Image (cartoon, rainbow, N blue to C red; front, side, top):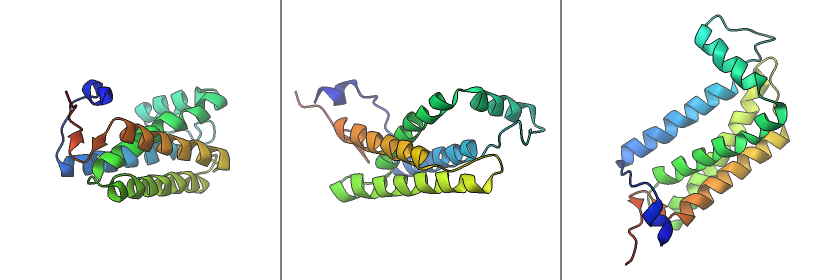
Length: 149
């Protein structure tokens, strides 16, 4: 498959792939729990810069940002699981979708943030694209599929 020839040839061990998925999930969760700086400004200068960048982004674009962020989440969780159709796609898709739902629901705990079904739909669409890209590229828990000559 030509996709496998152009896919990055980065081979990580099984534990490293799981840790990468976990660390990305935590970072994504932290990003989504930032309060609106106009309501609760941070005392940390670096955090204030991130908050203002996120919250100065137009709302429509901010909604669309869910897709690539959760596409990466789907890709990482697919790469964290062993090969095999159930372990490779069904389980990571379910895990990533659950994380997307938890991510959206946890925003109810932050003043100035809201959970929305629209955002959840963007999250789910991103996860589905990530799983689809993972399948199309032939990525597995062992790395890209070797191309046949």
